[in-house]
Image (cartoon, rainbow, N blue to C red; front, side, top):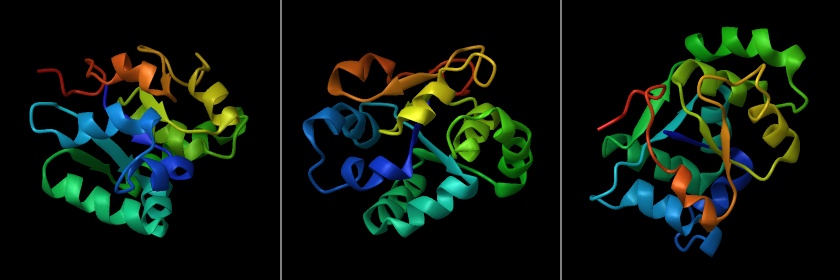
Length: 149
């Protein structure tokens, strides 16, 4: 599945030497023999730009064809629909997943974990949370994200 990286972990994931728990995610996004794809857009795009290292990294991924930008016009209306249903203040991340088909999220926000695992918000397929290197099996594509080999 394409992956969404929340702004609260962006400085760790996209740093020059990411912590061990984010190593598999970085390799999946960076290495030529892998097929990683980052999805970003809407408010999350603006949040990532504020994290200096993340903004530069996302631009590099986009140029390499390893990132997919979803325009605000697609994400914002969906964010308005789901805002009342979310426990977290990250309805824009849920909206991005729903619009893009990405079903793997990397975040340390526990309220967002609950929202992303909420069947009423993310379904067919369900959302999965990447938090540690042992979650590397989640780094793959599905029909919903449109990047199956």
